[in-house]
Amino acid sequence: MGRFATAWQAFWRILGSDGEARRWREGRLPELAPAAEPAPSEPPPAPVGGEAVYTLVLLQREGRLVDFLQENIDGYSDAQVGAAVRQVHARCRKVLADYFAVQPLHEGTEEQPVTVPAGFDPRHIRISGKATGEPPFTGVLRHRGWLAGKVDLPQRHGKLDPAVIQAAEVDV
Image (cartoon, rainbow, N blue to C red; front, side, top):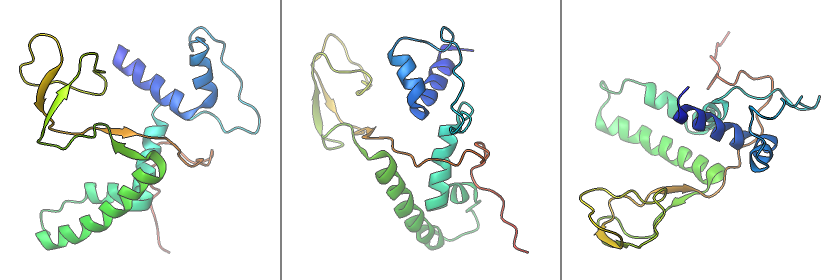
């Protein structure tokens, strides 16, 4: 498995488990630490990627985002699509606010000049174009970026299949 895939898996495991986060903080990497048996009252750990799917669950449950994105909208008028988008947008935006407190990463105004200082964090600012020499750089802010101010997902029932975004519905 490549480094990116390993880092991605570690990210979601740490994000979804206080115990996993504690082990990483203490330097007890998973391959070095014996697997801890979960307490009887705890649900079994979700498979890798379960937290990412759970984010889709919330966006689907509240805003029907997956339904909207999976729908072929070619046969609908712009007015029909616009009406649907307004509702999906409002509900999905609420999910981002409630569970992630999404906020701009940069406080500047897009399409306006900005200065990137020396010592900037490359995880927070991506330089494009032809940057030469050392910062500070002057450029135009193309996108403010987004930051999750928190990750506060509701507890997911342990008996649910973590790969299911929404169960099929059958009316009888």
